[in-house]
Image 1: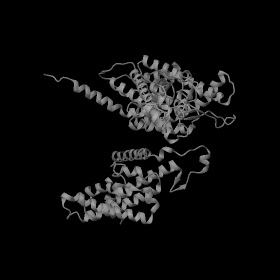
Image 2: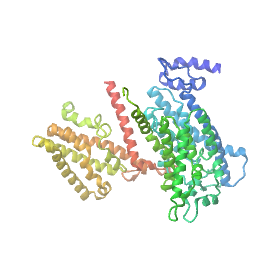
Image 3: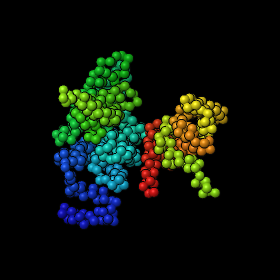
Image 4: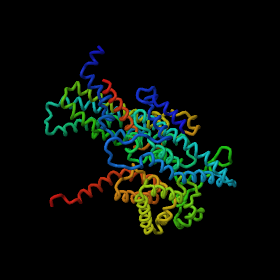
Length: 393
Length: 212
């Protein structure tokens, strides 16, 4: 490490003021801080003293994402071999998963990184670690069959329109990874319609056009006389299946159990708000219970899906743990976090059940509540100010 | 000759709305129709023509009447003039370009409420002579037009792979796995494209100001 440090130090004059690559200073700074940590400290009078700076914060999120990422890689391979009906060893499943997931991840990092560096150089700010999280979150929300050029377009949109337009990390009001996904979702709906995920097909294998429905697809397609639970068990899904997550779906979202592990890491380290997560679970439970009460012979059976099922299917767990708790786009005050989380839960179930065009509602629910986050904070602050007793009474 | 034109007031009045005072991307007026008619290039161009004609004539007429219009009822007078012109434009489109007119549907009629027209009438035509007002109307119509045509071209190319109804995306690109961008067909795409253009233009303008 010492050797590397000396080399980097030797390069410093090239990038500092007056150096030949002065404009590329953010790039140099990023390389140095990734390896050695920053020596910059706040100057002047400091009000808030906290060791949890943006960098550590973002790295903790990445650590929390590691379990779902690894499981996602394994699951992609598992689904592939399950689809072509060949038994395979653990190793070959992981290898298959890696060959599918790594290109998507690298595309996301390379293209997103290009925009990040471009804006850092033009606007002369530092390259922010938040990008590492966005660049990992986005591929995890995509199906394994997504074409790479769509990944590139999506992450470009997410970084530029979702974040840099508003001034970079900390100033975006939407979650950039979800903005990227929303772009792909509305631009190329056939590739992530949510109802049917095409299993991974390679040109060498016999497998072309194999499709398998996700639990949500099955639930939404259930016809009247049958109950949702029956349809799901007929398709081979149990609550336990969906908890563990060896089911078709987007790469990172299938395993509720590992999302909970991630949630535990985030809550213990103080990075994410447990209020948002609990609020959104409450929202789902309340809305699903209300909808269950409305079931009759003429309604679609989807209305009768129990709250427990709503919690384990689709990407609700992933969204509530990793997307909704984004510190920038979620509200800051405690009461507004409850309202915000609750709103996400309510909207998720409503979009799933009431709107037949969108099988999954977590993404749209979180984006919509992101938009309302500043209003919630404002209202809570106003309410508190109004409750104060004026001096001199 | 060119220098005389360039230094004339009419020239300045005409060119300002094409660049630094663009009604759509800088003043953010007339957004509603920009979102509605830009799915295809053809409808965008026809809309621009109708808009430019109406704007030029309304500016000219209102400017020549400016001394006899009583101040209290000027809005009503403006509306009567603009509405008459819009009806003429609408009827002409229906007579000669029925298909496009059907696609544009209500938006030609809604030129009446386009804020650019009322805005130019109030802000310019009532305070300046007819000669300058006509140039101002033409400039604003074309300034509106530049944005609409560029947005229309981008949206049609992205959303359908065509321009003016003619397929321009080569088949080979589709064979390689390219798919039309569904988002471009929705109205939010127009918002995003106009937003990007406004961003670009404002950056250029602020750079120009810093430079001079």
